Image (cartoon, rainbow, N blue to C red; front, side, top):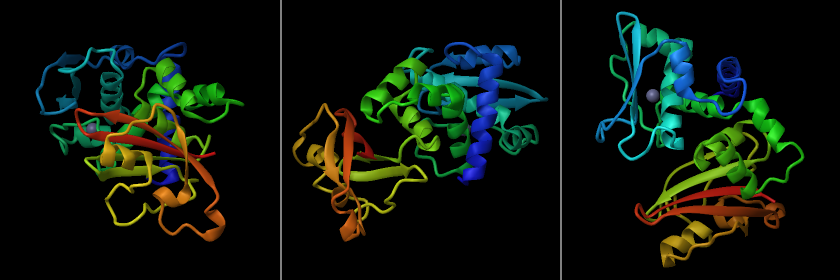
Length: 264
Ligand SMILES: [Zn+2]
């Protein structure tokens, strides 16, 4: 997404958060009520995480909470994402014209569809309004504790929290999501110094914390120092000594690791 668009959507989401939920937690259900959009929670199987429907100019939002309760960070994010399809002008116009008759959305952050990426970015910015987050980060050292403090305060997943932090230039960050030894997707902030993961492409490098999990199921509770060379390709000699940290979040059930990487 272009930086200009990112800023535009972030400002839109923040103005909505400040207008409807000026104090405390941003609650997508409160916003939906205030703008008269009915919504339903239900078990919709694997069909979607969230859906917004439009008929004769009226909207309805569906949230799949088969695995979660309504206040779960995942349900909150899905709800905020669907609100994005309503509040972002181009998305609402497309819905009104019937261009997107049913719009199943998945909250897995891996969509390549630009419309979905915009709604994801809107959702992260709605739940984590930029100036509130900036205030919380003020003069704080960047580490995993900051991320987990923010995600409990704002009731957002670590992934959503990091995605928001990536756009506020607090600190250069990279996120790598891998499964069964393969990189599923990665994202980095505009100011992250390296853009290419180590070759062979798509394989989690062995000398990383994620690599240790896939080769020997070893897990680390803490963030640990790594060098640029461990994760990245084309690292100049002068950059070899730059120290980075990696913190992993594991899911044994899915043989899945989320790596958060930042420079010391
Ligand atoms: Zn969507």
